[in-house]
Length: 29
Image (cartoon, rainbow, N blue to C red; front, side, top):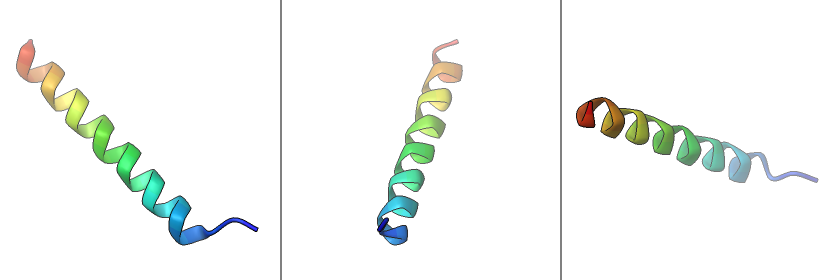
């Protein structure tokens, strides 16, 4: 059975990484 807390934490980390990457890309442009 999936650990929903772990899944939610993973999703939050991925989303934060995507925001950081898009912010860095727009700063570079």
